[in-house]
Length: 189
Image 1: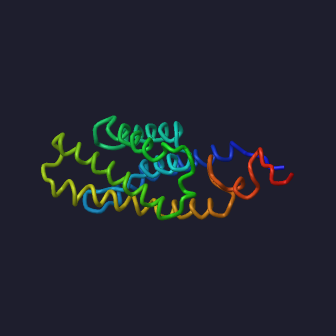
Image 2 (image 1 turned 60 degrees about the vertical axis):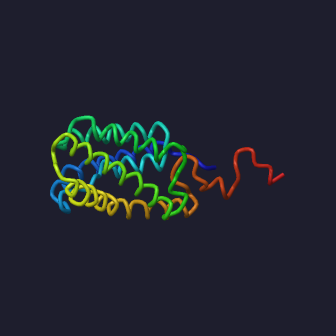
Image 3 (image 1 turned 90 degrees about the vertical axis):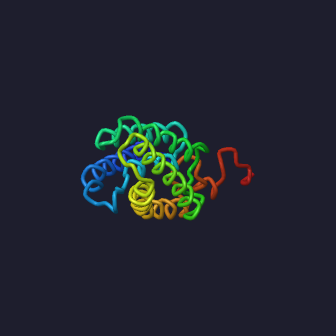
C-alpha cells in the first residue's frame, strides 16, 4: 500500500522558501557580478512553477516577488508583478516540467528568467536609475541572469535526476504511474 504524504511536500517547500529568503537577504547583496545580483526569489518562484504549476506557482511567484521588493531598493510591486507573470508562463501546463529532462528545464527557465530580468532592469532605467543602455544590458541584466542561472543549475540537476528515478516529484509526474499504471488499469485482468 502506498501512502501519499502531502505534508512532506509542504515541509520541503517551506524549507526551500526559507532557505531562498535567507540567501536573498544574506548572500545576494554581498556577492555580485558588475551591477547584477543573484535573484533567489526568482529561483524559488521558478522551481515552484515548474514543479507544480497552476495557482501554486503563481502564488509562489507573487509572494516571493513581494518579499524581494521588501528587501530591495527598487519600486514596490515591480518584481512581484514580473514574477507572477514569470510563474504563470512557466507553470501554465500544471505538470512537473522537471520530468522533461535537463536541457528542456534549463532552456525554459533560462528564457523566462532572462526576459524577467531584462524587464525589471529596463523598468529601472525608464524610472531614471540608470541612463545607459550599456549599463542596462551588460552591467545589470546579463550578470543578474548569469548568477541566477548558476544557482538554478544544481537545483535543476537534482530535481531532474530525482524525477527520472521513478518516484516523481510533483503532481502530474510520470513517476510511479508510468511503471504501475493508473487507477483504472486493466492490464492485470
